[in-house]
Image 1: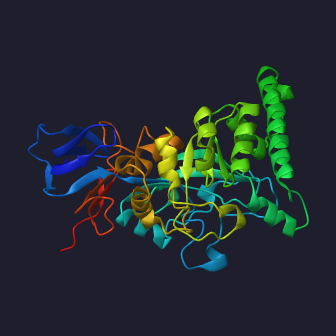
Image 2: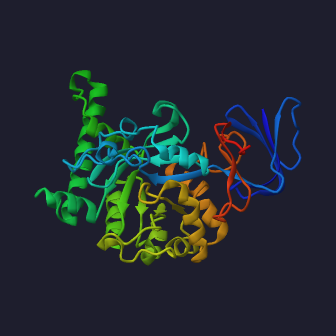
Length: 387
């Protein structure tokens, strides 16, 4: 057992402790509070004067799929020759030896939601991983997590360059609808095949994952920057009664009333970058604060490697500078990120029974000068104080 004592604890579940203790047994948190029973055999870590919070969750990135410093050889995030590739699985392209996993965990990012890019209308399957492990099979804890779809400029640009569809927003929406309808038919065939085995259709990897979307087992993870693309994504989700999360949502602050009405799940970012394309013209660090104050649950992402993943807390800090409430900014990179991506049963807050993913800072977590002193993933110390 490991006891972290005397720390200023931010649990992200509504109850904080000025001088609290956390008890870890194996991979889980088994006790937390200001007055807990300390087992005699516990290893004790004194966090006096330090800040303790849950491991940070990046709800949208491409870590391991665009490897650091490798160019084409390390570029495995877009299969940009077919606009419909739902069968692609992130876990088959992730290299756990990407240096950025080390940089992530050493800076307190303990969970990443990573997957394909946005070249295709339907890009493939995202997964949730811990940032520590020698092989993906040991790091992944939820897969498939979501199915990536993309609206707007990216698929238009990629396939217009190949002189094939989609080269318009109309075609992007139509291709997604066509595949959801095809999945509806495949689902009917599967249901019929269960009753009449001789009618069971041949396996179709594309349609199998699309059926999971229709069954609301996983959501669509929708790349959408511009306001009209965001609303198209929501429109299609309503048409097919499927779950959806809005990724990037760059102009979401301009339609916050509609997003609130739709009870939208919003993941904002990357904001710490240049306006590299037309649909980013209204990008602003004020957006997370505007959305949050409108009553919308907001998470923030790096879209790594667009923003190096270790700078997610810096993004949250800048959002505070631009008007976001400090605690809401911390939630945006912990519990909100976990809830929106559907992994809050495991990570995102310090609670009994949750994974012992814990970060101890020598200062306030949103002060860019603060350093991580200890980082735990599944109760294992992946970073310790330098001697």
